[in-house]
Length: 155
Image (cartoon, rainbow, N blue to C red; front, side, top):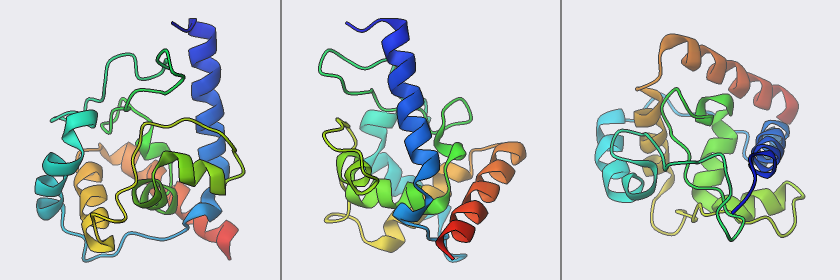
């Protein structure tokens, strides 16, 4: 079992790395993304870990006994909206460990599997559109700013 200090440091490390990783995917959600289709895809592919109502797993900020952080919530109480579209897309497509590896973080443990072999790009964007559709306007605006910052770093 980890201490609150360890969980806080791990969470801060992941958050910091993700914020710095705009170049990992630096894409923007297409206007054609369909949140209704995304709802069905989320239920089928994501809800078992992230919850039926985007609530995430308990104690999601504290690593488990294997050093893996539980699935975070995707509602406004989580940190998904803190990241730009490119990172969210890449993390979903490649999974947590591969994305972190691409960001220069070797040996990181992540419970997030890669969905690139089972979901096409449109399906991933639809799921992300569904998740975003649950955020209040403030969180959506912050997330759009993060996406713009990713794009600026990419260019």
